[in-house]
Structures are given as structure tokens and as C-alpha cells.
Image 1 (cartoon, rainbow, N blue to C red):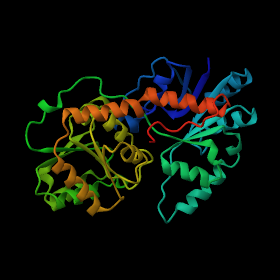
Image 2 (spheres, rainbow, N blue to C red):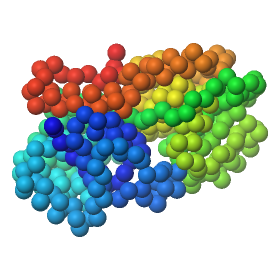
Image 3 (cartoon, rainbow, N blue to C red):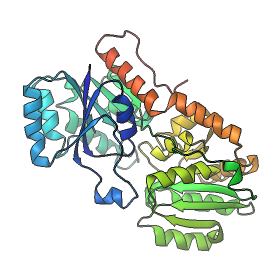
Image 4 (cartoon, rainbow, N blue to C red):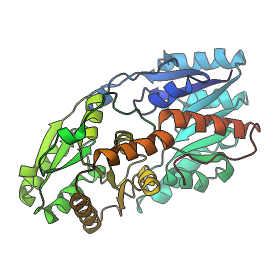
Length: 373
């Protein structure tokens, strides 16, 4: 049986479901520098369930020791590191795998592609990863932008595979038609209240369609809360904005499953796992093209993608969704069915193993991401 070892700075609620599903087919070990840090805990994160995967908490001083012991013993394992750019946690791992010529891959998010610093970021990425690129067997890119950037910094295109974050649906059955019987169209935002999430763009778009009956529920918290509260008042939409605050991830899924629409208007989001969560729970999405997971909306058709920072486009798409009305239970079932067959943790685990087989020469056909038509 194959053994897969994941190396991560910290536990992730957005990666654990995939690892849990993978552990049903192969031996999986997850090595983390910390479980759930204070920052993520304040965001409502809780310790995720890794199922049969073995979780190891490794303080910084233990990482090098484990690398030496495991790799010297010559475990027949495939190692997966989170992030192509070595940091204090991953550098000893990169070094050990590189020096011993062991097979390993990397899961990588993109970096911001703003015009001012993009070339500088590309150069930095190139030089930080130059020593290890030739040693990597494959790279899993979260979204099209990450795929493009990896090729730009010199990674051979044939080594790069599209990937993402794969989450589980809410575990309880909810009859959505019995929840919101009124005419109010329920819109949901989930995330930190920071500039790159594009919340001010959302507020300005909603101000243009204020004549409609809608409610925007804001889940999360952040440094821009006070400024956004004032903005909502100045735009005259404050009576339609409900500030929920920070809640557990399981409760987030419940609220998503009850909403009529999820909106993620980010000016940059490496993936945007809440998009995956929304689809898995049967709720359509409007998001910007600056979200890596926007590819899921384009491919599935369960929502709309607008040009990042374009208030007019966002307003138009929101108006169209409101006029279309609340999604029916049959529509939600259709979304859930597509998600289960294309972006569930189980589907992702199968796809991952196909990548392994292909890179080992056991399968001559290059696998395609299951969400790509």
C-alpha cells in the first residue's frame, strides 16, 4: 500500500476532508507545525477530523529530526509539501527530500497578481524555489492563476496539475423551502472583513439594486468592520445588512445551506474554499474572476462570475439572481449532485491517486481535473 505524507504549517479545515477520504484508500500521515492557531481559532475554525489519517504535531525543533529518521530509514512514501516557497517549517523538509532524491510534490496557491509588484513577486518566487524545482515530481496548483504562475517561474508545464480545496457538505438534512417563506432574497458573505475580500464593492453593487427585497448576512469579522458598517449606512443599505459575527465552520455550512445565494467579491483569493462549501451544500454562487474557485462556477454553471472590482457587472449579476428567485429544492439537489460527482473529497482523492499513477508511469493517460468539462 502506498504511503502519503503531508507536511503543513498548520491543520486546515479545508484540506482535512480530502486527506480523510484519501486515507480510506492508502496510508496517510499528516505532519503539522501546529493544530489550529489563535488566528484561525478566532475565525471560528475548529480541529478538523482526519479520519484514519495519522496526525503528528511537530514543533519546529522536531521537524529536522523526523526528516532525518524517516528518510534515512527509506520509507517508500510520497511526500506532499504545502507551498512551493520554503519557510521556517518546510525548509528542512525541502532540503532532506532534495538531498536524498526522494519523490515529492507540492500543493501551491497563487500569489497576488497586482500590476505594481507582480514582476517582483515572480522573481522572488523563481529564486526562492530554484533549488528544488527540478526535484519535484509534480505540483498541484489551486486554480488557473497558480498553474500559470508555476509555469512562469520555470516549472515544466507537464508537472503541473490543477487542484483545489475539497470540503464536506453539512451533515444534517434541512428543508430549505420551510425556512424562508417570505419574499426576502437571502444573500450570504463568509470571510474576513479585509480589503482584498471586496466587501465595499459588494455594498456599492447592492446600493444600485436597493429597490429589491433582499437581506445580506455577513459572517465573519475583521479590521474593516467599523468602516464597512459606516459605508452601509451611507449607502442606505444598513437596514438590509445583518452582522452575524464569527461562528463555527459547521454552523457556517448550515447558514450556507439556508441561503439563496453566496457572494465572494474578492479582489484576490487564491482559491476561496467557501465557494466549494456553497456548491457542496446546494447554494449557487456569484464570485469575482479573481477567485481561484471561480473555475467551478464557470464549469458547473451554478452561478455567475464577474470581472473583479467591476461594480456594474456585480450589480447586474446580483439583480439577475434576485429576479430568478429563490433556488428550489430540486435546483439545490442538482447542485449537490454535480458537486458530489466533481468536487467532493472522495472524487479529489481518486483524482490525486490518478496523478500519482501517471507520474509513476503506471498510467499513460494524463488525468484531467474532474470539474473540467
